[in-house]
Image 1 (cartoon, one colour):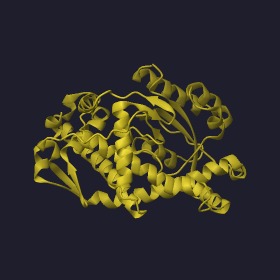
Image 2 (tube, rainbow, N blue to C red; image 1 turned 135 degrees about the horizontal axis):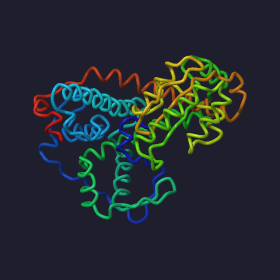
Image 3 (cartoon, rainbow, N blue to C red; image 1 turned 90 degrees about the horizontal axis):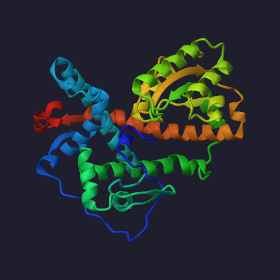
Length: 354
């Protein structure tokens, strides 16, 4: 699970590094960067964190047009940005709070060690998930790269801390349970599968990394939707999905996808919301996300699906993920109303942030 902050994070589970394990001290921030512009519960929100989150979503909101932030329409766009930033902040700190709930200090020594490993990988290079990662070569080059992305070392480490905590939570809620230390019965999984929490969909997915322009990809997605609308059933639709979803595994085309309301990052949520809004057999409009273009078809659940051991394992993992992310969703919703802004925040808007 990667939430809104995933666009900023290097999610690095299973990190191993070559060379000596040097510790890199956090670079100093300027007085402006350290200004507290908001509070969320007991957490103080610094200007540099707020700015980084703004830039993480800016291009998606304004399409690269800086003038979009001007006038009355710009005020509405600024409010949209604030809503999304507040949601991202609540996501961030809910992860920290849930870590505490399971007895892990998000700012303790073990998490600190993981954060330091991430920073070291960024600077020196290393191996992440068996793949070599090239570092920036020096701490200054690392800091320069962060500055180019409107981030400080402090914010980068906070995002790494989020990533490390999320890995701990996933291990606690999902991997440990799925490994059998706390058994999940087939009956529990089957009841979950049959509930309204789980929906079954197929989809066309057009990747933004296919070398085509945005306009061409949008047109392909519309063509795919038109073709799906002409199909008599899912057997015909599978051919259309295979034709347009070039990188999708044939097993995924055949079986479709089972979704729950919570276990997805914020940019993917329009896809999930569309899945739950469709009647069985319904086809969605084209949905544009940071991960590309989607057209969904709502499918009936296969009552025999839990009889497949492989699919039962997938459903069990889905159930455990649902437990984790529904709890995070509750905590995020509980944090959101508590955000307050300081007097320092009144000096900032889209104009002077950019």
